[in-house]
Each structure stands twice: as C-alpha cells, then as structure tokens.
Length: 189
Image 1 (cartoon, rainbow, N blue to C red):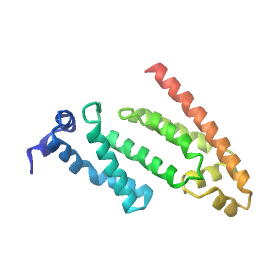
Image 2: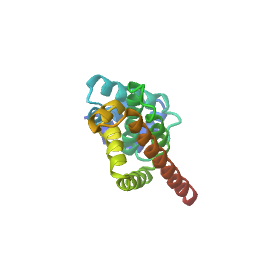
Image 3: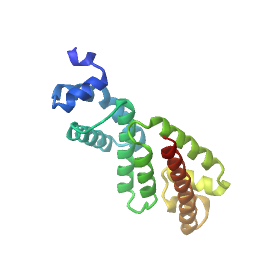
Image 4: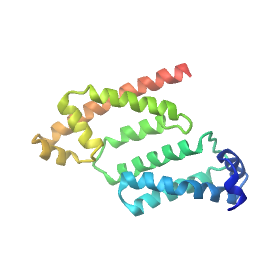
C-alpha cells in the first residue's frame, strides 16, 4: 500500500496539479474500474469503454494545472457520461438528435453541479411522463433503447418521417424546458 492511497482526492488533485505523477496514478487506480464499468454499462463494448476511460484520464492529466474539482467522483461520473454521449453521437452519424443532448449534458454536467444535474434529470423525467403516449414511446425507444428511427418506424408500423418529427418535437421541447431550468438556476445561484 503506497502512502498516496491514504490521501484524500482533494490532496491528490493538488499534488497532481504540481505535476506529481504518483498522485495521478493513485487517482487512476481509485477510479479507473468504476469509470470503465459506467462506460461499459452504456456502450456494451470493451474497446470503446477502455478508449473512453483512457481519453478521460489523458484529459485529466493534460488539464491538471487548470482543473478545479471539488468532488472528483462526481466529476469523473459526469465526464464519463459526456464522453459516452460523444461516442454514441459519432457512432450514430445519422442521429442528428444527439447534438442536442451533447450540449445539454455539457451544460448540465458541469463538474461540481451534481445536485443541479440530478434536479434537471428529475424534471426531464417528469416532463417525459407528460408526453402524449405515442410520442413518449417513440422518445424512449430512441433515447433509452437506442433504436434507430427506421427500427422504431418498423416496430410501430408508422413512417420514419413521423418518428423523426415526434423525436424532434419532443427533443426541442425538452431542450427548451431544460434551458429554462438552467436559466432559473443560474439566476438564483
């Protein structure tokens, strides 16, 4: 057991900001597995999951001198989630709707705003429950089950254009509501 394993995350981050590679290694040892598991749970691909986590830790090392993090665990969790969305958006080139959520999660997942993020997620889930039944079904099939618009159209026996319109309508409204919530939070903060 190294002496670094006894240090709190905040102290390790301070050491790392001074180019202490051992502190970085300890952070890596502490959080690599959890970060990988989170990525794998969503991506279901070992190579992509490793790549996401590798890229995350490379980013942390490269930004070590300017990185300001109060809660490392929350920061890493949000950063993994953001990187997963980037991977999914690239792998679904025809999926124009991920851009919306990329920007939303980039805004909502600022490292130390986990409480705000949870509140936004709760509001989003509440709003999704108020969607008309068919739109809600399409929205969840697309974002939750990761089906393509063609797969959804085939499954529901409707046109692909209808699916795209329903996703676009729901996504735009959700974005509008989340942006309003973010504006409210930023004016209160």
